[in-house]
Length: 77
Image (cartoon, rainbow, N blue to C red; front, side):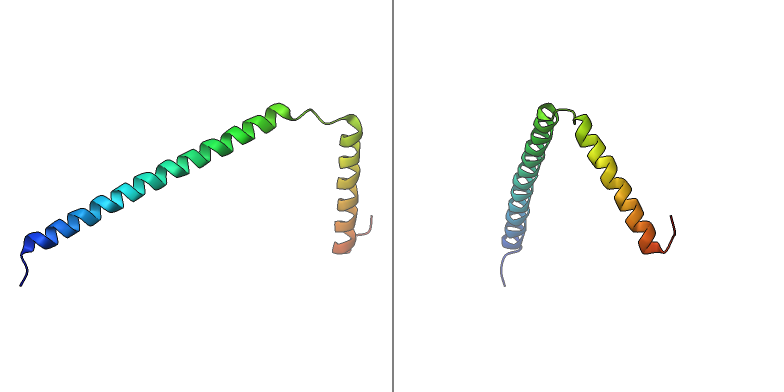
């Protein structure tokens, strides 16, 4: 029969290893989130407000979609 201290040592070592892996994973996750936040921040700065023509085109497309949805639902316009 083995000494109980061997099991205690193995359990402590495994727990320490899991703690180290968890800490590393959380730091990586936080780094990835920081990277995505920085990318979103840069996009917001670089993006120019849409032109009037683009806004009119989007409104036209939305109207067409509403009409097609009405046709699909069987509602007469």
